[in-house]
Length: 524
Image 1 (cartoon, rainbow, N blue to C red):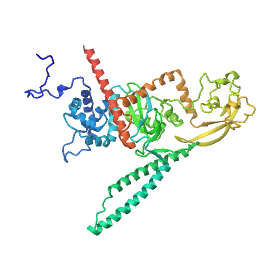
Image 2 (cartoon, one colour):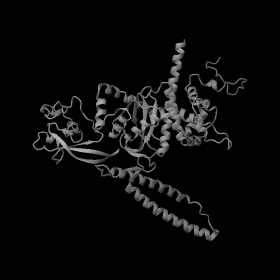
Image 3 (cartoon, rainbow, N blue to C red):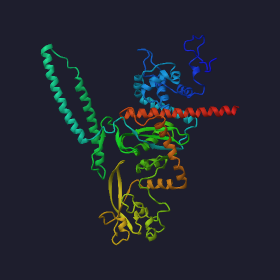
Image 4 (cartoon, rainbow, N blue to C red):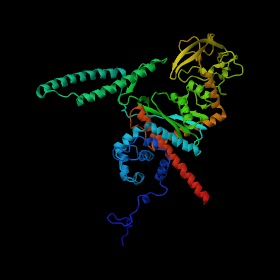
């Protein structure tokens, strides 16, 4: 008798009753619930793109979409690996019922249904809301950095791109002249020659010129934005050459590289992603109010509380959120420090701060001079008071260019800075007067800061990190999405929605499995 266990199936044995494909998948395998969820969704919009009377019968779109979504949940992104999994992995074979799906089919499918995918994402969200898994009481908004499909060193500034374009034009002109001379010789020998298409070499150069032209347009656009700032950097902006929609941004691991900034809105109740987008402007604050409006459109209600980091702290966002009756828990970059540890906030503003408390006055981290939060605004008199109790009256109005656009500002100036004991810690450079600028959104900013600094606000804001960062961490680690496979903002956003949809389906499966387990325990 052999010591080793006997194989349950002999490879060469004919069986009267063969084991079914279904018997190879355990009853509690995730692919079963995955298949169950996908079959419960509406795929009619996807199916409308197919014509049943032309060509070979097509594979149902929910099957190909399911392969991509299930592959992401298991960490498989590449189309060739998915093709191999459909032939080698028993769970994929069970899901596709033995269908083999070519990698080119998966590639085309991945980018063809961008709009339909976004609506499928919302459909899953509404199902989760009907099950009580999404409540929109607290919604966290956060962006993350993911590399673009563009080499780290495949970047250039506008001047370099112009030089490359000039050299490329010379090369193209030279090759055209050589091609025309060759055509003339061929025409003499063989008669008329067809010129319906460019030679392969010229075609490649034309594509390269098109890419450089797009990159130059991107560089000029960035330079225009930078020119509107009060302080213009001396170095020229570098832009990606391969994926011109991406943006050169700093990486957490160090250095700069072409990146995109995907932004997700996450419901605080059970951690479902309720909204997603991809930013390539470099300012996450542009996406804040738009995300709230999309949530209202998708779910029929706005979030009660919005939690985000200081990247979303533009003054216009505070105003827009308050007008939409959404409580903003967003720390400001230049937040008003009216807490108890700021001695500038005293009972009588016309009296100076005690000299023993001067060291406690807030300092600007860059200049180490007194920060603007050391000056207190009196709304009744429309003036500021400095730490010495001196009145800073309205001086002038102007418009400032900021990342969110043009902002109306009012300046207040102290006219009695001479012989002030704090002038050395207050005035920067050769300035003889201290000026404080107040923009049109200051009241909304102060209101949000008071809410955030309250005991209840601090407790609420503690939830932000795990609400926001958990989905991004799972997508980056489990789905291995640290660099996009596709290029161009539209395709990159579609790729991000594939990941977010897969995340929500996996989460929905986990919730359904837990509910069924609890139900079985209660029955027992």
